[in-house]
Length: 230
Image (cartoon, rainbow, N blue to C red; front, side):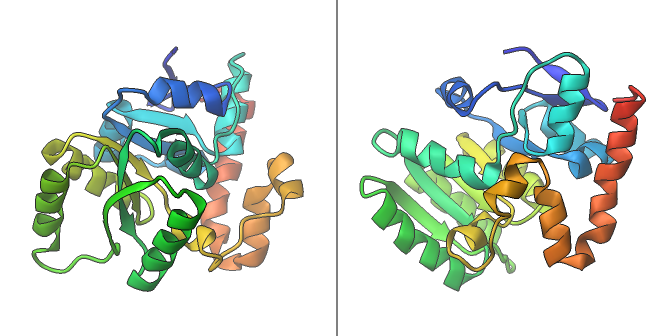
């Protein structure tokens, strides 16, 4: 798999979900969704985490930037791909889940056990930490030894946490943002029409106007793509 850099951040241009799943076998790294906002962000600590792990194109901006370089890649939506990982490895790997509120994570666990009867859940907890909670989590990861750990806290908080956890318990980690909220029906993803046109960001902007300042990152990034500055 070729490594490509966009604005100093390493990204793997996967051509399909199947290719990505095959690539993951045996890996003990962090999967990091890269979109325009994250690619535009300048943070030395976050960049180091990205460049020593597995960044993948999770936004239309990243896909367009890769195509501008003559590289074919597809958008891998993390909000869906974590379920592909579970489907692929439920019979051979064990899982641990971190994120959202206690109510949401418990609902997510109930649904996962219905949707994936063979899933091996080693444990789960909410994404809000009080003093001493991180140490307890590290102890539990070491003792229960899950193969795959999902962390849904939002970026870059989840990346910083996963970087700390993987140094204590090597495994495959993936940041999920608000995926548990979507999975349990608390929030809705954009309709397929918007997804196919690469306008999922626009749908979210309509539904959540407060995201306007965040979505300007996509515009700035696309300008860089157009003028070959990525």
